[in-house]
Image (cartoon, rainbow, N blue to C red; front, side, top):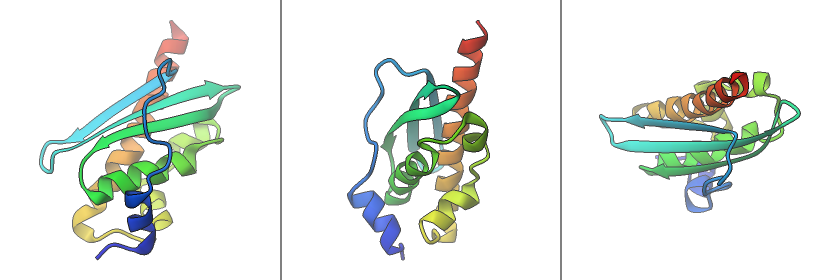
Length: 123
């Protein structure tokens, strides 16, 4: 059974879509369940100014994608990198144990987008 917050973020996801000229892109997937997630970020003054996601997957995958964008927006890159799977799950008032891996995907996708941005910035 999903919490009211999970169902709200599933039915009314926030920050959907893709930033066309994204500063960082994070793509992750889980071959076991088939969830695929793409997170794009726009960075200004070392902060996540904008963040969007595209997710193909179950209700939990969509809800965790939506929630991580809400948590990360406005944070510094360092703060955003520290967002854990537990932070995402707790913000959604928990996930069924069999769906906890979805919060892993969301936090991993965000970290990959930040790492992508930092790699591009080095060049």
